[in-house]
Length: 122
Image (cartoon, rainbow, N blue to C red; front, side, top):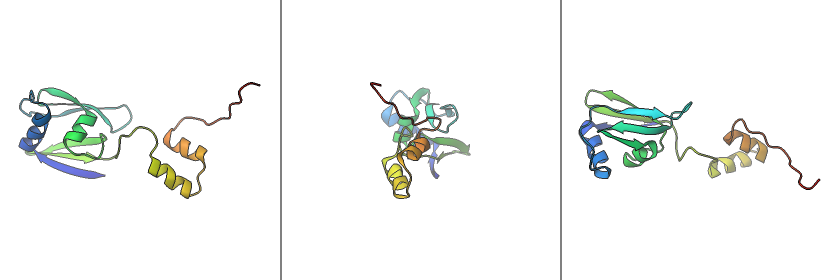
């Protein structure tokens, strides 16, 4: 978990650098992907950007973030890292070094799935 803080002016400057049509910053509305803190889109300065674009523009570690306003400051709390999709090679390697088999590793990254043997041609 990490935090980054921006004033309204800093935030608007970063947004307008990538999106020149951006207007004044009045508020920020985030749409989260169901059941996660990953942001699918953010509405601010009169425009809508993807959560990934927002993370890139603000140099956040991932699109899993929340934001709160305190006075003229916006505080972004980031809870994830990476692209939040699929398996982390480093994480899978660490699990294998700890003795986990491929089934445990796949179950960890792809919850709700089952690994089963499929035999073709019989």
